[in-house]
Length: 114
Length: 114
Figure (cartoon, rainbow over the protein chains, first blue to last red):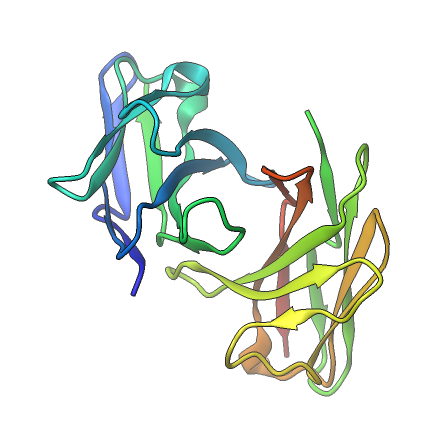
């Protein structure tokens, strides 16, 4: 069965420090992996996606994620957090790759302190 | 970018009443829309896939008579929770597909059934 595990329900960082949001997946197929962000009272917005091309994926707002098959991980990183990054982040897998059936992680709430 | 409008953003209703949630794609036509449900501290779970002009496809375990989905036009899908009960209280979110790959999410509806 396919699944996604977000290892941290909450992450707190200071503005200007690096961000790391962890995600592990389980899949019998080659997955497509996504990170979505949800700001309060807004819809989910796609940050980036991996679809079997380059393993290091660059997204919007300075975020990037690296697909590591050996570790079954797809961690989201950003070198320097900004106050506007405070939001809920979801790691998502679609399997078989490219289909519409999305499996969501439970989300990680990122807090950014001044 | 494309916008999906979901209305209402929150609703409180009495047990036994029905509640309708609307999902509109504002600047594109969406032949396929999706409805998700999220319980506190849990993942978003796909409830059903809504196709314009045809019956919705429900995921296993989702009661089609309780969660009525109507996709009457290329820009509107509705989810009606019939005879709502407190256990139906949840966060409901829709998404709409633009073209073959792009998915856009609504901002969600928090339903509370008293």
